Image 1 (cartoon, rainbow, N blue to C red):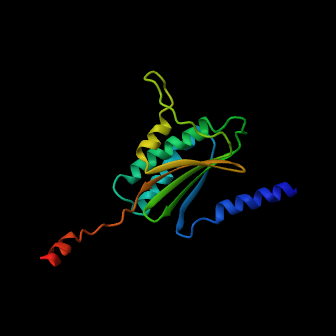
Image 2 (cartoon, helix red, strand yellow; image 1 turned 45 degrees about the vertical axis):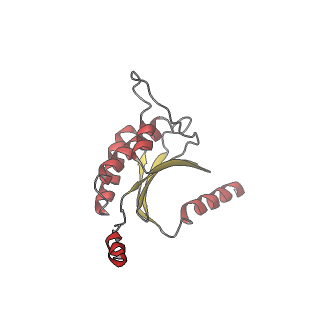
Length: 168
């Protein structure tokens, strides 16, 4: 019982002591089944639309979520009961949108390049190439694989004309 309480304390600290600038926009739990990948995609796309993300963010977030959830179902399930769920969390940290896909398997993801004839192995390279940043985090109950997109770019005002005017 004492170990269970310690594990809960660690998980609570992990989930609820985020940077105060980080805002959770939504969270969804889905059963670990291939038919639920579409639900995860819609969830992330709808959140991106609701929060007025930059152009193309919705489509890219939807694609990358599909890749991570598919990996969580296909590869994150080794020796894990089929009753376990996958959690998708979408958050905002300044101009960045972070999508975090949690599964209960502690095996770390492996980035590799697929050959022309292979039917799998392209998901993580796609995530790496299309995201601003990506990675994984191990925790006491599994891992989360996440990516970040610049979804709310700050407007950079060009004041170079003012400097030129002052020097004239």
